[in-house]
Amino acid sequence: MPLAPPPHVRLANVDGDLVVFDLRHDAYLAVARDSAAPILSALSEDPFDHFDPVLAELLESGLLLDGTACWQPDTGCRPAALPDQAAEAGECRLGLALPFLLALAKTLASYGRRKDVGSLLRQAPVAAFAPSPETMAVIVAQFTRLRCLVPGTGRCLIQSMLLTRLLAQLGIRSELVFGVRTHPFEAHCWVEWDTYVLNDSPDHCSWFTVIARF
Image (cartoon, rainbow, N blue to C red; front, side, top):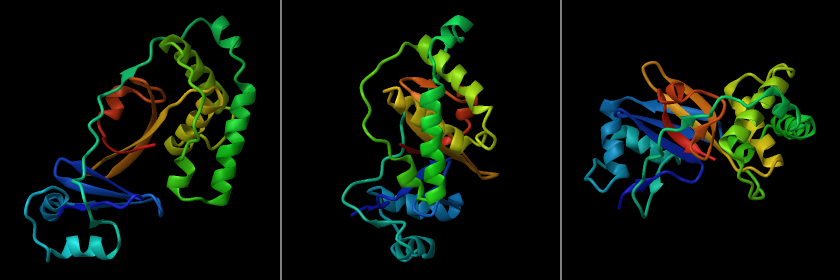
């Protein structure tokens, strides 16, 4: 029987290195490829060394469990860039100030209660609204202007959480995506909608292997 991560853990295979993302503690663990090989085998249906010390430590810490299905890495397609933003007049008609303030209040309240990452990113169902890519470009452009007025919202996590909450206020479902890279280790997050990345460039996001989507 293959091993599998529990619900609060996400995994990524980064060119043979294994990265473990513990949502409860908002912590990452990177395992170099030599040590990761038996763990990746354990996550598939391939034979593996049950006495491997790194594997035993992951099992003991609850970061891996006996599973009933093989772990499947993220296979999402590379997102595209939004089209150029519409005319300034179109942006002024959107009136995003109030939804932005509501999204900001929810985001700051979540940080104040120091919830775990999984709870912070859990989105309630939103109404179905399908804007055009051009309209979404206008929304993101106005969001960026508003966000720049609030100190401390430039970091990728809080910026992305704020954007997903704003879109939820507008009835638009989006995905908060976490990516990782190794040598040196780096974690990053961004927002995707439909086939587009909203608050980053596709080229920059392509440097990272997706480890989690919310």
